[in-house]
Length: 169
Image 1 (spheres, rainbow, N blue to C red):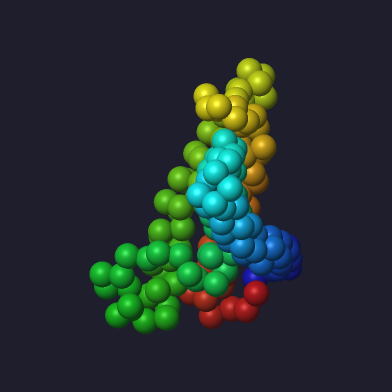
Image 2: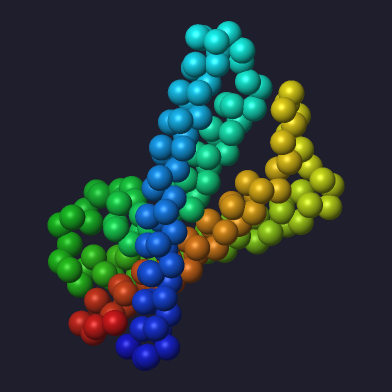
């Protein structure tokens, strides 16, 4: 494979892995928030109005920013009707074919998230709840997560092409 593609794959894989490993700890943050919600609501009898939305924001950031990492570790969901019976080269060929659909889907999500973020910033959008938090922070994380997954999808495509051609990256 050309050196530029090899460099791209290594850089994107490195970034996705570091972001994914960092975001992994978001589960503990979310657990802390939910335990705090239980304590304040049931023990202290002082419910906090922001707590459930903050848990939702934390979980959203967790799964959006962890998408690229799940692609590296091959932990994403795959429909396995006949994929498991394919040879290594056949699997690479199937992955190359399906990568185009994934990239198309992620590109549409990415451009949609850009327009959504621009709208959110222009209108100073807030949620219609008692807490009424601004929406731009989570939409920014959404945009970054989709971008990272899109970059990782290209990296995976390049790795599958190399696998199909029996080349190293």
